[in-house]
Length: 150
Image 1 (cartoon, rainbow, N blue to C red):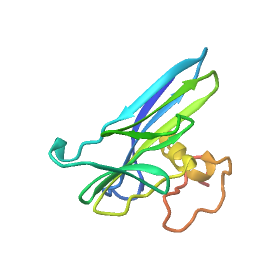
Image 2: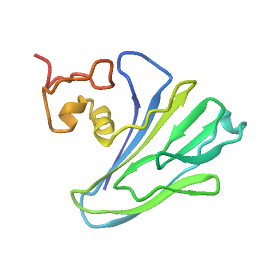
Image 3: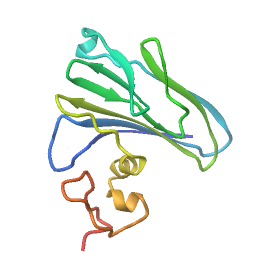
Image 4: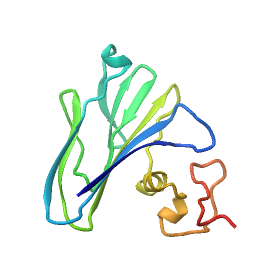
């Protein structure tokens, strides 16, 4: 298996408070049982963290800070005590993705997998979705990548 970690920006036009930590797990050979766990702490552990679900997605919050735990092909995220976690198996050619978008004093945006893949690969959302040169939404997180630029 191969694990790739990246700290990505939700918007490449500004260093906004919205950031995202991503972990992609790719199966290379054999089958490997995997277990993951996130124990969010805010204010270096000095603030109380509240865990809940928003739109079915586990979210940790403390005051104006919020962190979502988005998982694709990485098992169903479960809230247990003060943590969020899941289990899954890797297989050759398979790919799981866990994204932790974080927001400070602004709305928490729950991304689609294509958006996360695009930021992880440093491509645009359209290319990550297999639609290069597709029109980009105005003001959205999509951006042109080298494959789409004239």
